[in-house]
Image (cartoon, rainbow, N blue to C red; front, side, top):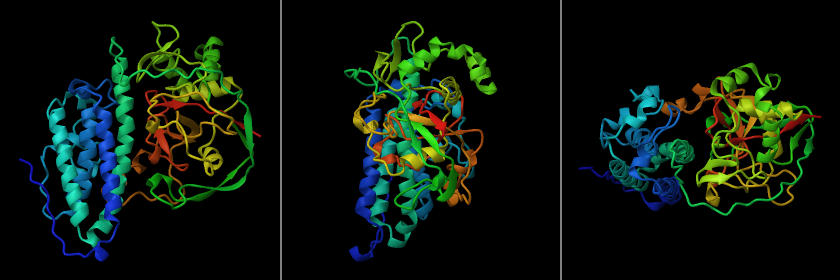
Length: 431
């Protein structure tokens, strides 16, 4: 039987330190949102792992819970006894300093604990976390608040991963199951694509110190940019079809050498999830749907994005160019909160449309440390820094990113061959 955590404190309201009500509300809201996403899945759905890079939905739910149990309760509660000592091995992701880990590619073999047991595990840790937030001393909570906040943003990342991974798993099922009911398609003609110019000169990029940021967004620093242009909207499916019709996947002169080798080895001929058997259709979280020529192209690798940009006579933006253009823009967009779960055609007459939401936008910037970078203190120091090699930065969020999770300085990163993320293309040019 689980043993609920109970802490005692004699602190008066004036001595309670950090805003406990806001912290508790943030924690419970994020945790509830994960369960809402998982509620659409059967226990069998939650067990599947369709490729080594993906994880079962059940594992995502357990891992994010392990994060709070280990990095918060285990670190700040004297004599803390874990719910199950085996969970530390099963649900550790990549934290070498926190002990052994089950192989990533074999997470789908973990039929035990069951999805129901994971639900109980989540409920127990939620109860213990609420006890901790409510009753910890002001000094202890002041030390823990940054880790709790990091944990909520970490869980929002896993909400997106959960949807990415179940989409890939469902796409391998010949029944093409839908995660969510189909929505009315928003077909139409996209606004003409044109390039919008931005001045060069000295600019500051990186998080400005207001609110939460991951360590890889820091420190804020100065960059020198040459004049450049950005596409007024994202590249569409229709424009990608023109690339395909012009032999884009068959012309090695358009591709980086590694990209061409990858495309040949994997026999790429279209974006991921475009159906080879059912012409004009693609797989989505709503099942098989018609390809909307006006919607942003999605599920293309960095290699494909770079080849397309070269075919179009353009290039991909630097992440500093993207951030400089986006810094003072509204972050309204098609995020997870919209319920669309799919990229949508550009709307209205915004000067620079779709900078936030719809699809993550590949940049041409390698994922590397900013000058003066320092990782988070303690075990969380393994969160970002050790991955700063051989990956590429993406910006802007997607249609399955929680809206409150994104900001102009946010740096996502993936390997250049990966396609199951909700990734697309915005063109850039030199001026």
